[in-house]
Figure 1 (cartoon, rainbow over the protein chains, first blue to last red):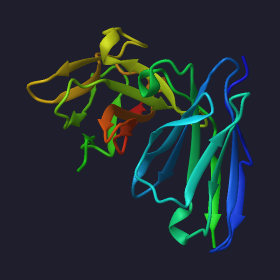
Figure 2: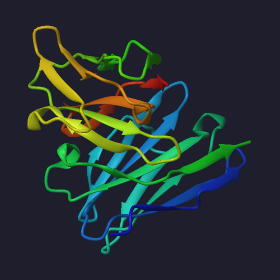
Figure 3: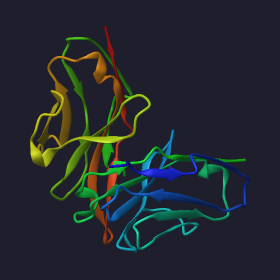
Figure 4: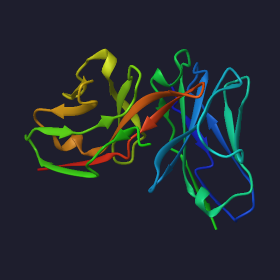
Length: 115
Length: 111
């Protein structure tokens, strides 16, 4: 099976702009989770989508949002970008039945740089 | 509050030596704990979970509720074990569940 794919792999934006990241899960996986990874804070959970609904949510501001489509592909949007949003954004897919307890299969990440 | 603590950012051992990567957690409920690993130029992947009590690639991890620890151990380290290791806890909070990761330990196994 093909692994989790994320596009684009690299992005450079300026403060105030918005950005959309995409994640295609492993075929048959119905859950997609998003994580932010920074040197200071490490890996932090953003949210999880399952069957097109946000099932779980982390502690990020409303500027971070997401959605999931009927084919389980997911997008994450960050509006009004701040310098501190520079990070590696990881997407993980899982079968979905047991939320974060399911084995998470991670993508390669999208490296976002905000100037 | 830090839920998962990995006290060592870096750990270096020689091939054939025992290795222990420490993980401490704070959680009032019944914890579900995992070790994830990221080898060089590879993706983050699950190594093992406490509930299955299995040994993967020679690694084991025992949940010690009294000490709130979930240390990862291997009796004889191999060079291919060099990687970044993350301990993770499923945290139920405010109606949501999420995987909370420690900051990670970079293990280097020297020849």
